[in-house]
Amino acid sequence: MTLWFVFALMTAAAVFAVLLPLGAANSAGDGGDESLVYKDQLAEIERDASAGLIGPAEADAARVEIGRRLLSAADLGRNRPMQSNRRLRRAAAIGALVGLPLLAIAIYLPLGSPRLADFPLSARVHTPDTGQSLEELVAQVEQHLEKKPTDGRGWAVLAPVLARLGRYDDAVRAFRNSITYNGESADRRADLGEAIAAAAGGIVTADAKVEFERALALDADEAKANYFLGLAAEQDGRKSDAASIWRAMLAKAPQDAPWRLVVQAALTRVGGPDAPALSDNRIAAAKEMSEGDRAAMIRGMVDRLATRLKQNGDDVDGWLRLVRAYLVMGDQEKARIARSDARQAVAGDAERLRLLNDGLKNLGFDG
Image (cartoon, rainbow, N blue to C red; front, side, top):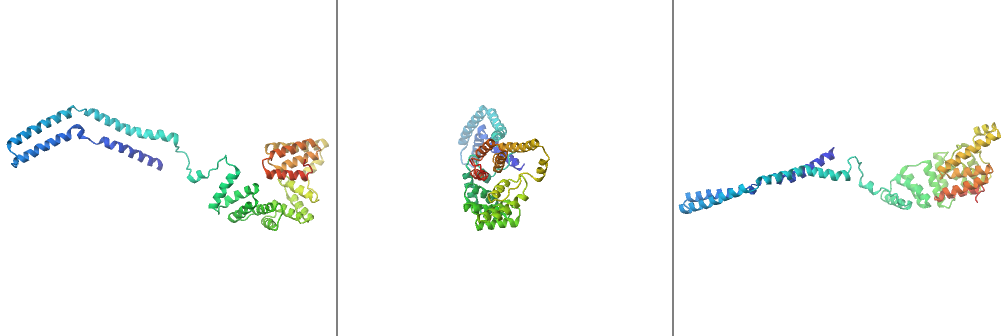
C-alpha cells in the first residue's frame, strides 16, 4: 500500500504541474491589461492638470486620444474568441487529469507486476545461467568464495564438485574450509580423507588415515571411513585386517546399502569370504520353496532391479549387482547386455565409469 500511495502522490503532482499554468487567468489575452493601462494614463493626466503641470488644452487633447485608444481596446477585446480559449484550456485540463494516469497504467501493466516479489540486484547477478558449463559455474563459485572466504555453505557445495572434476588438491582445501566454517562431522572428515587419498593417486596416506580415524571417532559406523581404513590395511599388506574390517561392515549393513557390492568385491580381492546377497529371513524362506518358485523369486528380484536401472542409470552398484546376478544365473548374454547398458548409462561421468570398470574387473567380467 505504501508503494501505491507514493505512486498516487507522484501522479497528482504531475497533473497539477500541467493544470496550474492552464488554470491561471491570463487577462492579457482578454484585453484587460491594455484597458487598465489607459485608465491609469487618464488618472495621471488629471493629476498633472490639477498640479498645473499641463494646460487645459493639452489635458483635453490627451483625454480625447486616450479615450479613443480605450474604446478601441474595448472593441478589440469583445471581438476576441474568449469562449474558444476557455474551452481549449478546459479540454487540456481534463486531458491532463484523465490522460496522465491512464497513460501511466498503460505503460505499467505490460512492463510491471504488483504481485512480483522483490528481486534485488545481487540475486540477479548471481542467478546461474543454465547454458553455462560446469567449469564456468565452478569458476563463479570460486570468485564468490574469494570475496567471502567464510561462506561455509559455499565450500560445502564446491568441494565435492572439485573432486568430481579431478581437482583433488583444490578439493582437499575446500573440504578443510568446509570443516572450518561448518563444523566437524563424520562424513566431512571422511570426504576429506577420500580427497587426500585421491590426490595421492589412490594411496591411503598417513594424513588420509588420520581423517578417517577422526571420522570413526565421531561415528563408528561411517561407511566410507571404514572402507578406506580397510583399504589402507590392504595396501600395507595386512589382508586379514582388511578382511576383518570389511566383514564387520557387511554384517552391520542393510541389504540395500549402495556400497555393499564394492565392499564384497574388496573382500573377495583379499581372499575373505563374501557376505550373502540375501538376508537370513529370505534365505530361510527360499529353502522352503520348490525349485521353480525359488527360481521365479530370484528372477523377479533381478527383473525389478533391471527395471529400476532403466529409470535411473546412475546407480553403479545397481549395475554391478545386475551383472553379477546374470552371471550367477548362468545367463552370459544378458550379463553382456547389462554391462554394455551400464557403460553407456555412465559414459558421461568419468568417476562412475571408473567405479563400474573396477567392479567389473573384480567380477572377472571386464570384456
